[in-house]
Length: 242
Ligand SMILES: Nc1ncnc2c1ncn2[C@@H]1O[C@H](COP(=O)(O)OP(=O)(O)OP(=O)(O)O)[C@@H](O)[C@H]1O
Ligand SMILES: [Mg+2]
Image: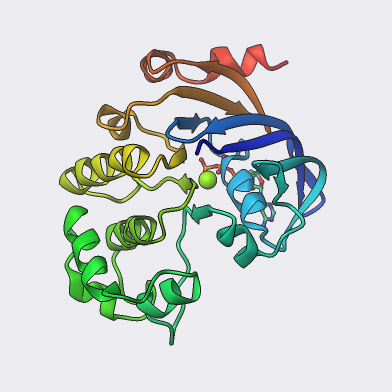
């Protein structure tokens, strides 16, 4: 069944500043949407707001999966409705092991450890890393790979991945991109990937690329847009927003 993640007119305030000023996005199962944009333009704020982070106040607009309003749900309810978020800076959760986190998030406990190992192999993560407390003593790149293991186990309808490629070495980057591309076909995962770099997109072909500037999506285009951005930077698009 095809699902749709719909974001309409989303406005979000952080620390008394309106950071998101009306964001519209529609993502269907199996699609890969990419958000690029300058530092501070509001990309992570979008991820935090979708996660239901307490510091992010929704001023207006909606976000829903198949008509179910996400913004009124608790973080765990959002996960149960098929939304997975991987944050730019994954949090340490001392005392909690990845396997416990996954079970709490609703993963089938049958052979869970075996499946985790298999997912770890797919992103070239040493499986013993997953025996430590969540993100504690993991390197930057290991944390990112561990998030992708979670995605492989939980098989969310939609995954919002904030700079999943940052800190990954070039081999891991390829492995992660391939794993994400496979998720779109294996169970029709819809992906919203925030990134600064085209490298991720070599093996994860975007359906669409969106440019965010000053809290709005100012341009949308096909995969070719990432080349234009790399060549010309964001200045021409910043101008388009005013
Ligand atoms: N908790 C906070 N308190 C105060 N200001 C914040 C907070 N979180 C974000 N901001 C501000 O909101 C704006 C948008 O930040 P955000 O993290 O969404 O940017 P970004 O597009 O993800 O940037 P980057 O590419 O650097 O990750 C920035 O000006 C930032 O300083
Ligand atoms: Mg960010």
